[in-house]
Length: 332
Ligand SMILES: Nc1ncnc2c1ncn2[C@@H]1O[C@H](COP(=O)(O)OP(=O)(O)O)[C@@H](O)[C@H]1O
Ligand SMILES: [Mg+2]
Ligand SMILES: [Zn+2]
Image (tube, rainbow, N blue to C red; front, side):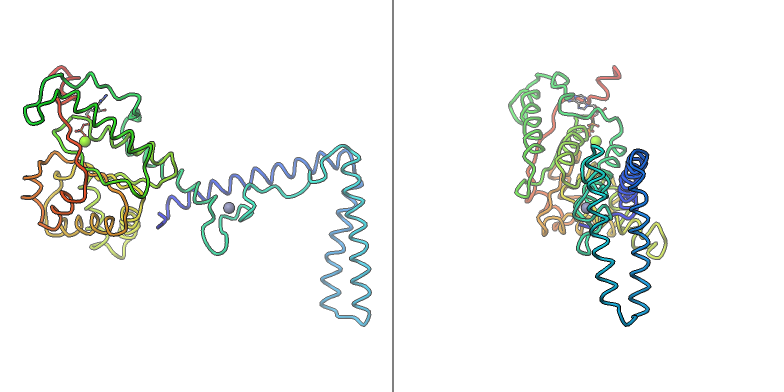
């Protein structure tokens, strides 16, 4: 998994907040305890003085080094035992003054065995989900808010079924997909006209899948393909670097939602970028949802045979039918 620098920095900031809160709590506890048992303060002063003495002794390497070290160690043990006694006698838990860490693996540093620790990874995914939220314009895209009554009962001549029935099937398939999302899930192609709920349902899926801990990335096709252009033509500029990171994320995230395919410009550059994105995800077994207003014929005409055959062959199609909901709502 590639990390986006900006989001990783935010996740690190979150970890720093956790660390600061724990430090504050440790200080509060220390003040609380020493107000009641001042002797603990003096014991800690002695322990600190011993530390300094130890350092001096080892550097100085005097003739009686061994004996002096043993003396200090014994005295330290006594002091620590006395300290624990005082603590419990005053009614505190014996670990009340110990360091507080949220993650015992990395002790809240975010790094464990030279890699990003699972706790920081979780914070990172949370940032990712937050960002996903801002990409989804309204925030009411949830399965519970999906309104089937917006789809007419009219029989669709192509399927021979009432449009609402088709959309009930699509809705159920999307919900099951989100709830059971895994490495063996299929890729989906949302196909149908404008205003039929393709973006709405992909946002519902994104919300559920990312809440289940998968990394989810959402972009319109035109935005996604522009990143490739920017990465190429602004390679040495900050925006080129940001674009390269974004591309890595689009190519490696658990679920990529590529919205509105067919509205972007068709340049050779865009075609090759689209092929790279779709193909690299297929090769690595990463799941993709593509939504488009284009029919199969239109897809085949617009894109190279390599792209069209990938999309038509490796994606499960969900047909979106009905009447433009945006127009219905605005009384048009
Ligand atoms: N089943 C639904 N229930 C409630 N609102 C919907 C539903 N489908 C779409 N909408 C709303 O209708 C508008 C158009 O839907 P959208 O998902 O953008 O269509 P598409 O992506 O297919 O063009 C959006 O404002 C969306 O929130
Ligand atoms: Mg849309
Ligand atoms: Zn950790």
